Amino acid sequence: MLMAVHERSLAPWAHRPEVRIGGVVAVAILAAFVVWLLVRGGDSSGSSEQPRAAAIPAVAATPERLRTLSVEAGRPIYWLGPLPNRTYELTRTALDRIYVRYLPKGVPVGTSDATYPLVGTYPVSNAYDVLKELAKKPGESSFSAPKRGFAVYSTSLPANVYLAFPDSDEQIEVFNPAPGHARALIASGRVVPVG
Image 1 (cartoon, rainbow, N blue to C red):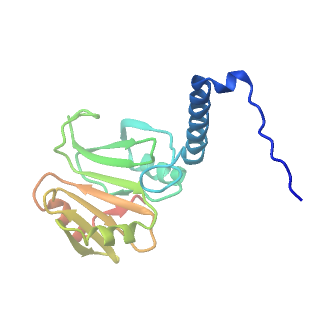
Image 2: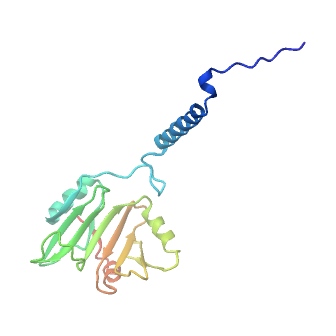
């Protein structure tokens, strides 16, 4: 048995090329919107979400304030311990990066002068493994640190050394502009959680 196939007749407006192009553009815009909805909030590292924290602009802080912030943040904040005749400058970014900078007396908090020691504590999942992978790249050097720590620095930027401990989600950056001092501070075991 044969069946007849009938073509449906299109409305007169459907024969106009600008209507067909408009339909294609509308479908493309809709598809782009759906893709945007699916990937929004993502970043280039594959993480779907960045931590958000109450930012703290550069302020002078006491050791007690640093301890309180560590409790509030629910994670350790690292520093070099107390140093005489220093102002502890505390900064926290919206991405929960916490910095403690050691300013000599008389240097204003918030100075843009990058000649003072600094310890940064950053939330990084599996920080120890991340640094182990970084150490394999050309131009990177590494060394073991006290308390089973592992440190990495770029041979072209040795003033910045990154440190992590096993089973930790904190990456620590130690900056000291004097050649070799950041490495020496880490090797000496001076980089510790505020406690």
